[in-house]
Length: 207
Image (cartoon, rainbow, N blue to C red; front, side, top):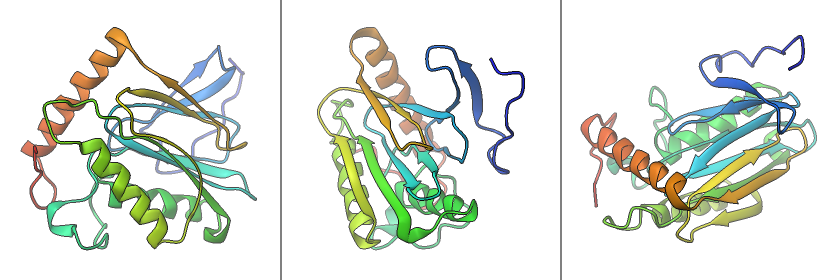
């Protein structure tokens, strides 16, 4: 591990960071409902089942970040994605707005943003396809905001591990199988139940 570690961008001190000896890099782990932005030579990682993550980067200034959301939008916001102030990034509309705004605040320019999207697997088999709804939402959002979608690995039935390098824009994706996948699916199911019991705005459907 290097002797000195650069400080995070203000506002992201709560995100867990650790040294990954395999990648020889500091790694920020993004959990459901979180997002993280960096201008450093570090790695941003998450694991996804039906959730979706967008990796957004200013290709000229090498400032980028990742979000991780479980549901596309609150029930009462089905017709738009306004009124984002004060809500966590648990919903896709908030997660996208907050990530983009944080990149711009860090010095990025909207016209230079590129987007890569991941996740949305059909892993919660006893419910309707939350992953597909997340995919439909994020595609609609990207089109409506006229953002440049440069890569996607979405859908299918497997969870994914995603590693994003914001300085270079490279992303590594690995499908998860077996017990690791089962643990992730159980975690997503419990997280969805917590959202249903603690909605910020509107009601959460359990489909």
